[in-house]
Length: 387
Image 1 (cartoon, one colour):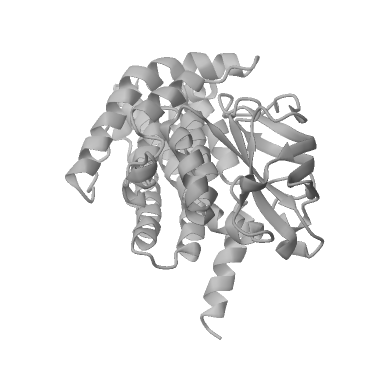
Image 2: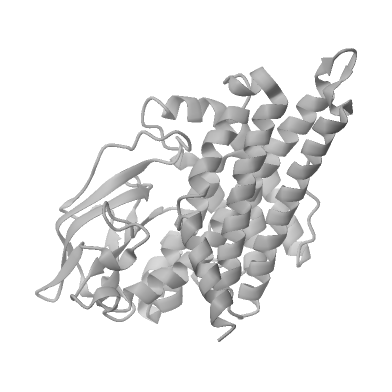
């Protein structure tokens, strides 16, 4: 059933209505066949991102002067949740694309914003966020991809791992080492997707999110113009961490939408499924399980909206973003697990989407910082407040 939302403006209500219409007409009719096909061959729903971009749903939190929607993060995240309730792979892609534009929007020069953001925010170009490496995931400071000065620009060499949209993106927001000063030696670059020397590994064979193509990105003497350095040299770590605070909220919202879908499926099945002459929902033990699923989903939604409101108010929200990511993704894992249980044997078959929801939920506890990292971030904030 549709979530009851209290949006910050009438325009927010209209955006939710638009999103639900696109979900009903474009996403839900295609998600099952596309995800099933993508499990065996590379299928990337680029046309869906074009549809969302042309509807203005890929650029909601960015300034109007560059083609954005100038919407509060609270509104943007609830749109992401609605998309996730229809197609999780696409919602993750929306969050990733928004993340790729953040460094330029927040740290770029006026000239860079004017040159890059209009195409990026329109959805005509799709981005990838190239931060993680085979041996540098949670430990960003251990990255080895290196950018060296080459004439008036830069030359990039190295490998990035677990990159969504790799091979399909038009640009790669790339973090590379420009000195050996640990975290202070990392810089951020906007690398064109057609740059010579850029290549990609085979798509990863994942247990879920098959519509979200993930590959290694290989930089072999990739030339990058001087004006594609985003922010100051050595500022990359600060840019990456700042962007991840916002990115974690995107994943929290997507995980909440996934949990809502699993809850709706389980509640509908429990109402329709008759055993011993009555719907199984009339059994108190199962009804209480559904109540716990609702409580977990509602709590996740409250967590990410609270963090978004802090962000919109210009207040620190790093701890609250970590809390939201932790709470929402753990809730998604629990609710999708319970949905399979409610459906019983049917939940273990591909005839119902419960098993897909279950598989998709697991990775939300891993990407954008594992939930162990979120606990580390939260604990540091809590303990620093006692000092």
